[in-house]
Each structure stands twice: as structure tokens, then as C-alpha cells.
Length: 185
Image: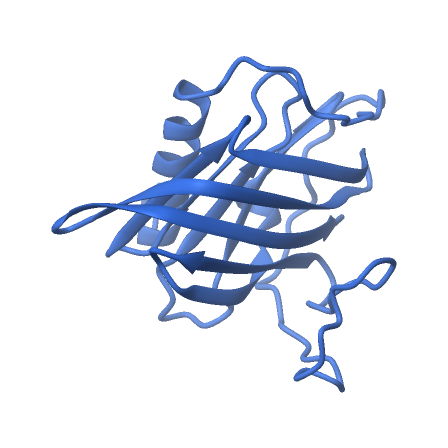
């Protein structure tokens, strides 16, 4: 089986995140206890732009619209400025009782950027990479607010400060992240 570049990048970023965990259990993830099941085979996710795409629709209680399987909306600021709305890729994600490992990517076929999110209460972290910049975050720089996490999906938000990015010319410090995610089976 030949793996595409987006899946390879996802797997590489997820393995970096798993190896660099903080070990802190500051997450308030109330994980589900249902048995792990293989994710059903999915077709390519389709992005549905909300009618008020210019408005801040990621506020309290509002879900960002991404299509059938959900996604993540994020903004990096400070030393690296970037924002985006990525779709959730169920076939490149996993669930075990009590935690989700999720991969998100750009909806276009040309997109190579990946946002990986691990909601393992013992190792909650994220990683982002687009071929030019790589950013990783975990506690104490990041606060993970998990609204729900069970066999049907996971949703919540994360906020990070004082992150460092790896770029071609070295490192860039002082990066902040704000993100809202909603992934559903």
C-alpha cells in the first residue's frame, strides 16, 4: 500500500507529538468508555462554508460548519501569522476508550498542511506542519478545553502561548494559537 504525502506527514507529526508529551495530566477530558471500533470507510470530506463565513462563528456554543465529519478552525499569531479551516480526516485518525488522535488537513487536494491533535489525557498535545513551518504544543504552554470525547467524536478548543516554530532559517519564538475543533463520526 502506497501512502500519500499528506498521510505520511500526518503520521510523522503524530509520532513527534507522542514522543514529546509533557506527561502532565492537566486535561479535563472526560473520555468515553465505549469500546474501540474501526472507523467506517469514509469518502473524501467536503467543506461546507457557513453562510456567515466572515463572522466569528466559533464562539461559545456555536459549532464551526465543516461538512459531515467536522474540522478545526485555528489562528496562529505573534512570531508566525496563519489561520485556516481544515477538515477532519477519519481514516488518518484513531479512537481508543478515553482519547482521540485526530488529523486535520486542507480540503483541497493540493493542500499539504496537517494539524494533528492528541487528546490522550496523559499526553495531550498538537502539532502543525505545512512543509515550511512546524509547530508543536503541549501543557503548560497550551490549555486544552474538551467539551466532549466519546465514540461519536470529540469537540472543544485549545489556546497556547509562547510556542516556538521550526522554520528553514532556524526557530521563531513568541507564537500564540487559538483553535476550535469538532470531529464527529
